Amino acid sequence: MDDALIRGHQLQSLAMPRRPGLAVTKLPSYHCFGCGKDNPHGMKLRFNYDERGGRFTARIRLKRQFAGPPGHAHGGIIATILDEAMSKLNKPNGITAVTSEMTVNYLRPVPLNQWLQVESHETSVDGRRRFRSAEIADQRGNTLARGTGVFITVDPEKVFAKLR
View 1 (tube, helix red, strand yellow):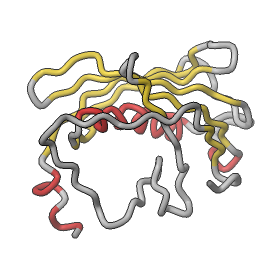
View 2: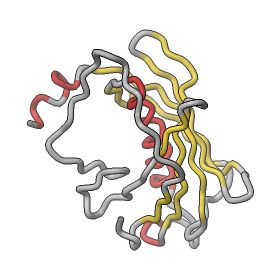
View 3: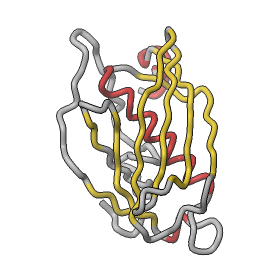
């Protein structure tokens, strides 16, 4: 992991459960800005799955290239982290679901160079629509930003066919 971009700490590695019979489509390389290992300019966020709680968590520390206001993270970076956290919830279900809509509540400035905790969970499912929530908290447990989103389950063979 490139320490100049973002520092992530893996809390606990857990095997990702998959529903039997569901295929997962892998793209040839992984350039996602949020978590792609092949993106030299990406954030390289690393999440861990809490199987009992049905949540993904990450411990991160943002560096200054993600600055907005002096000493604090840019709002777009905050939204990216929340979106990425909610997107990780696809994995336990063995699905591909894309962000349809997302709302971010910026509650307090998110500081740079301090450890932060990110957590996400799914709140409900209605057909192809999956409702999710994520939060960023400081070391004292104060919620700094909260995101909610609607994700739509898609067939990756159809949606991403032109990328191959």
